[in-house]
Length: 98
Image 1 (cartoon, rainbow, N blue to C red):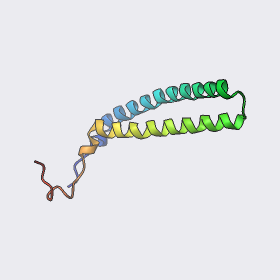
Image 2: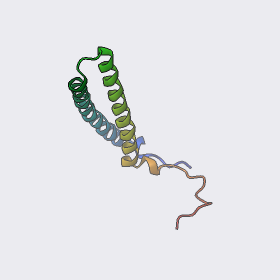
Image 3: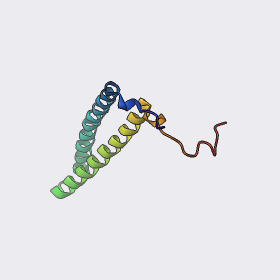
Image 4: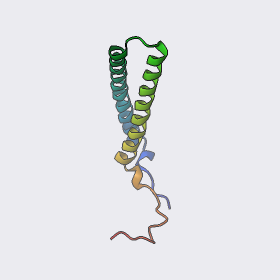
């Protein structure tokens, strides 16, 4: 039988997803700050090259940072709620824990 996940409880799930959204809003503000700082630094070093250069830089850094924070946030959500422990290990009999 598959054990129930703590995320099946609506109250626990609401708390976990609210914490995930707070983390994402924080990371969005950090990402915007980093993107602006990177564009300013590039402008200081190279001058005005092309608007496409700055758009590509902003999109590349922004997408990479938001994707990384979303994936890490989901890892923290899964581990922090105990969802990782609610699995069935088919190989548990082959390798008993010491």
